[in-house]
Amino acid sequence: MIWARPLSRADSAAALWIRSGLTPEGVGLVRSGLESHALVTGLNEDTRELLAEVVGAAWAGGAGDAAVIRYSRLSVETWFARLGLSELGVALSRLLLSEHPPAPTKVGSQRLEWGQRTRIMGIINVTPDSFSDGGAHEGAQKAINWGLSLLEAGADVLDIGGESTRPGAAAVTQEEELRRVVPVIEGLRAKRSDVLLSIDTRKPGVARAAIQAGAQLVNDVSGLRDDAMLDVVASTGVCACAMHMLGSPETMQREPRYDDVGAEILDALELALRRAEGRGIPRDRLWVDPGIGFGKSSEHNLFLLRRAADLRLLGTPVLIGVSRKAFLGALLGGKPPTERVGASAATAAALAADGAVDVLRVHDVAQTREAVAVGDAIRLARDGGARFGSA
Image (cartoon, rainbow, N blue to C red; front, top):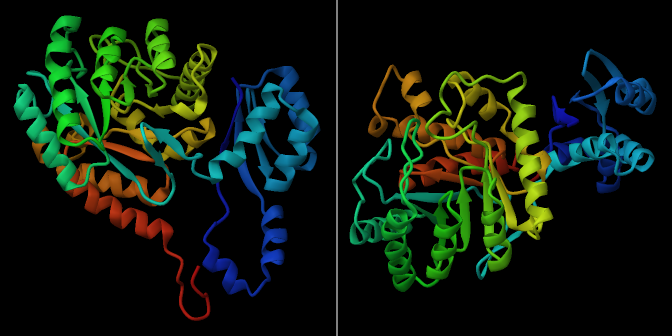
């Protein structure tokens, strides 16, 4: 696939434009001509020649299947008018998606607005072998109580899982997974009718039973590969999150390799979204997750976090889970999962400040809530003093 990924972005803080003294009309005119740079990849000989012809003087160079171009909102709109819905035209037009949060999403009875604050998904592992808290919440009543405490701490949605997907984890039967998760979903729904509940599963049968019990989101770490899972989501009208995973939990960490980790994950997620759309699920009911730690080295994980804003090119809400993961422990000199809370919160704050993520999947809700409150505040800060104004 062809992807055009922003290499730099013009400062969007309204306060800086107020400081310029320009009228709103003047600001709009200047901003339409501001140029950033983008890395365009996935080109063949024909599309490379076409790109060079269309962008003209905005061509900055490149080699092989890649090129660098300069662009502005006005130039992208002009190029798209010429190229239309061709692969190259769509890739260039998506550069404008990176500047904005996705459209609001309806999950259950709630309408979620994106961009104002980073939402928190609290993790409920009803398993004996999860990497960070295996066995701590095993059993329905323990898990229900844990979920209620996460809501008190500020979780916006709860993600219930009955099968560990840690590296090397073995699969469990559908019957066992159902036994673990359905009573928890039913119990939480009975206690809090307004709560948003997600089922973390790869099995269509578990997803359907969880939805019947009260779940409104399917969080599928296998990336919605199973047509039967797509049919469950389509027929029930719930939302679904497609995560990228290289292989399976049993094999994913066996020397993961990529030529371009960012482009390859965008390719995989875009294909998952198209398959879902082809089975009757509109894109406005779909989320994406790059799958940090699922078939990636520590360096892959860090690079993906640095470039997390590229996921905006897909036009969907972005969910990311970094909480207590092994690469954070490695950065801290080998600390175990329960001692990675600070690093997890720091990562959450950085992502919130960058505006690169809509939902963070976490174990430690209270600490993350505080961290993203700071990150969101930095990103949304507008008052630069009397000569800047406040916006």
